[in-house]
Length: 366
Image (cartoon, rainbow, N blue to C red; front, side):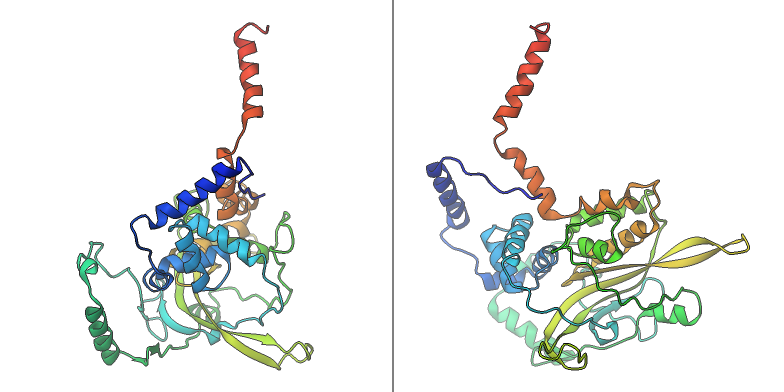
């Protein structure tokens, strides 16, 4: 249950709302939505992922309105999303169709197709670059010109590549179990109330729109000994999936589809070693796979999600990170921040009741 502000004194509330706007613009200027969209790419991606709404324009507006508060921006975007009509469902996206801009593997040095470093902070020194403060439009234009002349970017568009997944090579060698295609329609958690035990499609949806920091914390707890052993990232890829919708006039004709655009996502597959008991009673070491995906470039979250996907699949009751009710009920940013924020609302009656009970006890029950 999400909490929202209750009504109070109308004049006081109106003045409080004016004060919010005053604090945002009291310097006499205001950051533009375009500046937020262009300069806060990673923040935009996080908000889109947690709001489960793919629109960098709306995410930038929400961030401006909320003065950079991620939890408030996600709340705004989720609320807006709830007003939209669900006219179509896109067809399933096949992983082989992703246009890759970044692809790395921690498991294989010479992964077929090669490592594509792409855009990442991983290879930079974590030192403040003070030239960012003084860069001019001319500096920016000059850098863009030099970069595009020396790279594979043509007219501002990068030529992405397509590769099969690294795990496919393990399956061909018989080192990773192959599962039959599951064509069961996923349950939509935005339309159906979450009930336990959950299906994997529900768990993945909750995790995909979960609070980034919460997923990181739970996955870190698992790595620290409260869940699975240390996983290895078989492949992490960032790229764009083409999206198609079927012709509503001919729903039975699967081939009749329309391209409506593409979405950028981060996808992670982690290999987790498990001990499997064979039919003859002997045990052998094997690998199982954890999966994570999120809107935009959101790499730590995707890896954390792949870890939690496996801990929840294992259902090991000895660890809190394997308890689906514990994890799924506590990673949602709107639910958790709303519940914490509701503590700021009036609790006069309940508190006075507790206070009277304590006074009675202190006075000997009189």
